[in-house]
Length: 321
Image: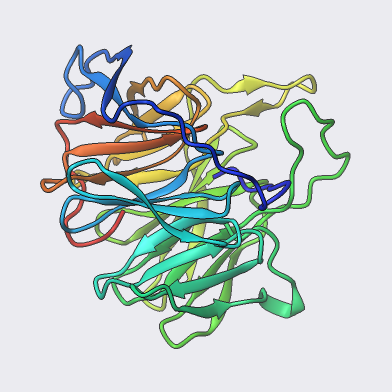
């Protein structure tokens, strides 16, 4: 998730690109995941910066444009319409079974619930120990209704000088009773967040390093045993010799394979932390979600566009991501 927003009052100008236009990006085979020769499809472009896709039970999709402070809905036929405006730069979202959406309002530094009629209910407006929330980013919900979310520190845009000091970001857990717990304050730039298919492992993407972090989830939702689950492929070297993966959003399939958007594409990682391959995307991907009636379509947000790719794998039917 691209979390540093310069302005939320951006005029959105949609292009006239046709729906489901084919993009000349074909894939090598990733066994069990994507067939060789599969083509990425462009659904729509012309946005300011797409983010936060989440599938709906009827085969549709919600996604966000935090830079334009808008939220969109795509129906099962691929028709995209504006659903909400003035979203406070909402980036990551999560769809609950009752039809409510959870939203990370990056620009307003808070976590909210959004009713189907658009009514907002703030859920978290401050961090633990008097800390302010900074750039509420991405969301994951456990089976009990507890909410994990990332809150990275501000960062420099591409082409801008890196700050001399990089404060770490935070990972939080909001219990079903509304109590906020700090999960981690050591990850350089926590971004995408997910749970294993069985809910026993929490995964956090770190944009500024090559590590994807894992935590063991305890019965009360807290975690222990933070560790590097995998070092992502094709990281970008920095002048100081450190490596940056650009890791962003994540999704998981029914075989507990992780799909991670990175600077090189969507990297697929198996349940043991082994790299399986990369789904190439025409534009730098930011986030992704399984969707469609059978959950066998991977929707990918990237730059100003929304893409889809048919996959052999399947997303969970009992949770949004």
